[in-house]
Length: 229
Image 1 (cartoon, helix red, strand yellow):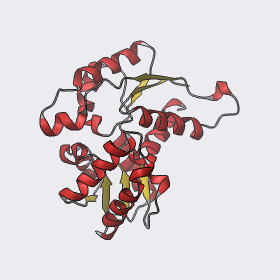
Image 2 (tube, one colour):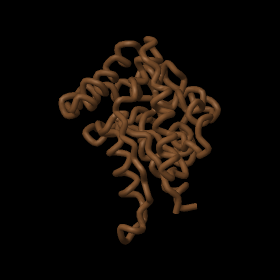
Image 3 (cartoon, rainbow, N blue to C red):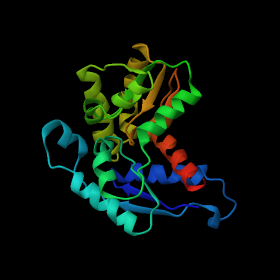
Image 4 (tube, rainbow, N blue to C red):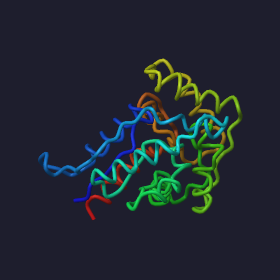
């Protein structure tokens, strides 16, 4: 069994969600069968979207600091419950000698295996993730087309993330999130990606006519597969 290090705190609820999904999906009959996981919950890492879009303070140094702390603590691989933070994946990988299990690659592989006929993807994510190309570049390599969202729809999604889940007001933003899901579905999406780690916290509260791929879950499953080679 290999040890997994979580670069967490982006945000804390998303980190809990990832850890819970690893725990629930690990085949274990007793405590000792579970994966050794080291969590560095570091909410002080600067906002990734603010940096990408507006030139705020660069979170790279704290991300690398967290990665090195986890490596020194004995982690064999790293995972990050923040999609937007994967904009800095290569920067992190350069500074450590252990692999970073990539959330987007894990998600793309899951879509390919589970929904082989899918073509158009509705990506529900932060504006930073959308604008940075964190998903677009990888999904393009898999032959997928990401549906382009208008500014108002992007802003509504951001409100669900920042004013809803991150602010501890998830239930208040469920109706708005449902409208966002319905709009993207009507735009012709074959599959939706919950491409912000706060989004899976909203998903159980809504109904979708098309499959919703939980990127956090796919990352959890990839981490489990790595830990039990």
